[in-house]
Image 1 (tube, rainbow over the protein chains, first blue to last red):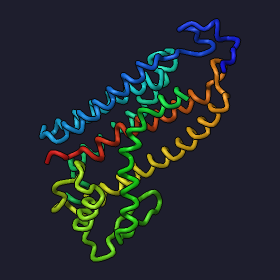
Image 2: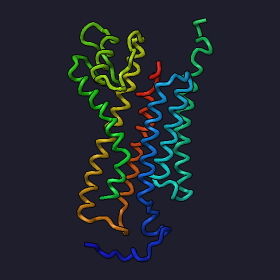
Image 3: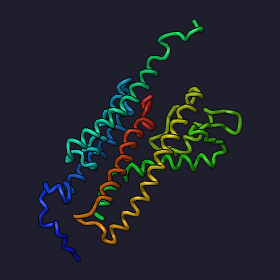
Image 4: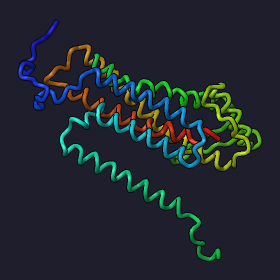
Length: 117
Length: 155
């Protein structure tokens, strides 16, 4: 049983007022399969000794996967620039916390504590 | 409903992987160790003799059951490092599990609403918002999984 909805016949692929952007199912499945492949790759690479590069490779793959989720599953690719700006601000804020924390971790032991020589 | 299934498709795999942390907690509860939680900090104590290494190694082998995720060589690790790792491990996976339980609840409500025909081209905001929430949880795990399970795997 199909119920006719008034706005439906006016919908175009870019009819943002009513439906927003409807992402075709094949794109969702393609992204899903890509995510699975990347998961397999990151798990496989983890067993190869690359020294300090291991963590870099793992995080690079993770960031690519997160970007795919953001762009397609969370519709960022089809969103307004304002939305993009706010997402950017959020990640910038997250970045400040990580950078400041890591600056502490990395610089531990560079200077002696007062009274300890 | 198809849309809901699509939304759930990607995190479903993550949910399966998440089974590890659920198993962890279950195994933990039956392994004779004390886990005390205070102020968001998980403290680990062995009931026997403070033998963190032996305890953790045994427990890890029990959890992983010989799967690909079994750490080959946890013996000889600094007990304090092991404790620090598991403090972070349980807080992170635990918080993630809490988010997932909440998400499963929201998704269940959404499925019922969808089956009752509440959504259409003119009204679908709950579906959209739930999708955003679920994929936010998804992204957390995408980052946590390599950091918790894949670090130092080659050594």
